[in-house]
Image 1 (cartoon, protein in one colour):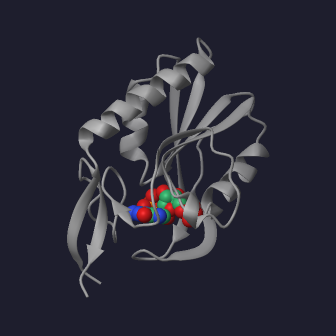
Image 2: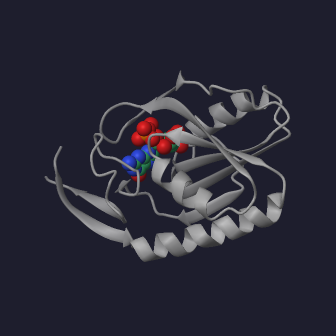
Length: 176
Ligand SMILES: O=P(O)(O)OC[C@H]1O[C@H](OP(=O)(O)OP(=O)(O)O)[C@H](O)[C@@H]1O
Ligand SMILES: Nc1nc2[nH]cnc2c(=O)[nH]1
């Protein structure tokens, strides 16, 4: 399948504005307490970096890589930790940063897994939420934008590993 066109849904300015708002909201919650941001690779790299810059609480950034999708736009339904955290989160305020929640399978699995490591608090922030696609319930604490059930790329999100570098988020039109 080839991409025919990408239709802009969220501009760079809209995303920047929302990230600032989220940063302010999150800073209010943690205040002077340290918070460990867990960036879920690869899609949330851009979002994590921009959001971290807008949080005024002391921040630690850790990375984790989880595989839940095959190639293209289809979900395999199987979640696997590909690269685990290199550090303990016991007793820490943990904020998981995701680019998108779709079926909810990835985050539901991941949150259960992280809970067993005894963090002080465990919250979830996602840039995009596609509630129409939900198969498994996930409690999301901070949402950037709720979007309809369409495949998106840009600002970290890929189509077959491409288009992550687009500064905006767009809906994909596939060639017939
Ligand atoms: O709610 P779900 O249906 O489980 O889908 C959400 C997951 O899919 C995307 O990751 P992807 O597997 O595409 O990896 P990537 O971030 O490396 O592109 C996204 O970053 C979430 O981790
Ligand atoms: N790039 C991308 N990855 C996803 N993973 C789940 N939904 C999506 C989506 O709309 N776009």
